Image (cartoon, rainbow, N blue to C red; front, side, top):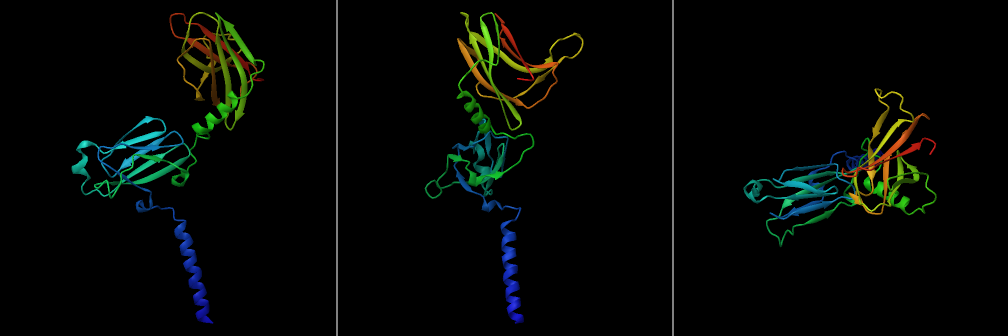
Length: 273
């Protein structure tokens, strides 16, 4: 009976140890996905989100980001002497909502150890993260923006016209911590409109004293397109952080043109909109 109890206890203990091992907060580099890299051959990591941070260690690697969601790394020409004695490297990539790590080995024999040129960061490689200040990934922003573009345009919510140019607000939606604004500009003049900037700010409805600070700028968290000019029409989706402001203030959207003609439009959106 005693031996039976000991056997049951031992079995439970082994089971607990096994579960504890599976839940270990540590991860050995040998357990990471292994990728072989060849000398002077670029290796590209493609992320589904913008890359916020990247770290290269171990092997003498150089790296850059040709676009926001691609990390490109390479073993430089003069690195052969440095590689000897270094068995492995480590690549850490942090996106807006995840972290992924990869073990790198130098491929001395391309036939026995085929080098990889492209790695897509798929969910099985990701460890979810909750980064303060990032509630939407770029993919999330784009999904909401495209959904807004697909909505039929009804009567403009607000519109202003001047010098052959009009600026209108089509739709306003909220999602998560953000306000999405569907803006459209039209050009009825014979001159192309070269965009200098499109800015958002909250300001008083009536400025009574020029010496007082009557407005403050707002940063855009996202914009779908980044055009430099438009001939006849321009439509874009912007996202700003949710905010509240009193009835004596308005959200102002300012579209300004580069110098030469320098046409400027200011669209005021009251809080009730």
